[in-house]
Amino acid sequence: MAVVNVTPDSFFAPSRAPGVDEAIDRGRVLAAEGAAVLDVGGESTRPGATPVAEDVELARVVPVVAGLAGAARVSVDTTKPAVARAAVDAGATLLNDVAGRLAPLASELGVGWVAMHHRGIPAARADPPMGPGVVGEVAAHVLDAARAARELGVAEVYVDPGIGFGKSAAENLALLAHLDELCATAHDEGFGVLVGASRKRFLGALPHGGPLDAENRFEGSLAVAVWAMVCGVDVVRVHDVAATVQAASLVSDGEAA
Image 1 (cartoon, rainbow, N blue to C red):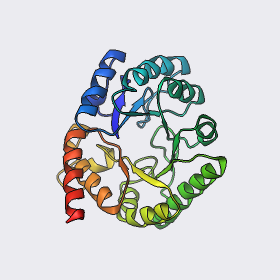
Image 2 (spheres, one colour; image 1 turned 135 degrees about the vertical axis):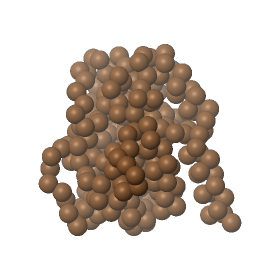
Image 3 (cartoon, rainbow, N blue to C red; image 1 turned 45 degrees about the vertical axis):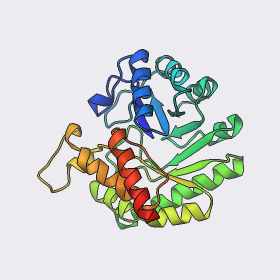
Image 4 (tube, rainbow, N blue to C red; image 1 turned 90 degrees about the vertical axis):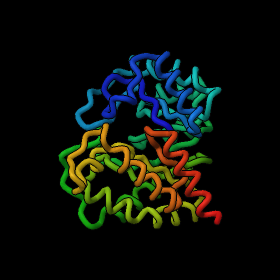
């Protein structure tokens, strides 16, 4: 899943597209690089981001979705029902819903839905750490949400542990260390698993000579994507598509061997 940001303020500057035409061009390049899904978003969820008015987000997102609908599968990264509905009308078939409120709409529209764990939108708040129970708490939350969505009639559901969303570096690492367990349970119940850790802040805070800004977190991002694939994750949401596609091919070949 490739990131297509129609925003001026997303945390990784090279992913920003200042306008509709630029975002469509970027999405087509990412599809050509091998992205299976293009995730179009018009509102940043980075820490400290300014909320975007509904009409602004609609103007950013809908024409980009329409322009990319023939290039690859398109998802919409939004928390707003009106934006989600308009994006589906324009060709999106997956709601990447970081707020976790759009399952009823996904059922109504007959599209897929991502159940993500978060502790506040934008992505970080000054909540106390979740502590040693983070793995169980997150798994229970996303699996319960996925089950509820299925009860509503959503046929395609992914669970996402919400790496970086209101979690400490240690909590993010604990979730990554137990991804295989989440994947096993989710797959047993018929759900997919999605992980988005690309270029996130915790990767630049690890004790390897940092801190590193977003532009210098490629190696960590690729390592996490490969780890996620090995653990059984179905979708990795990334900024660096070509390198991740190559890594995915190597992982697939290794598992086949």
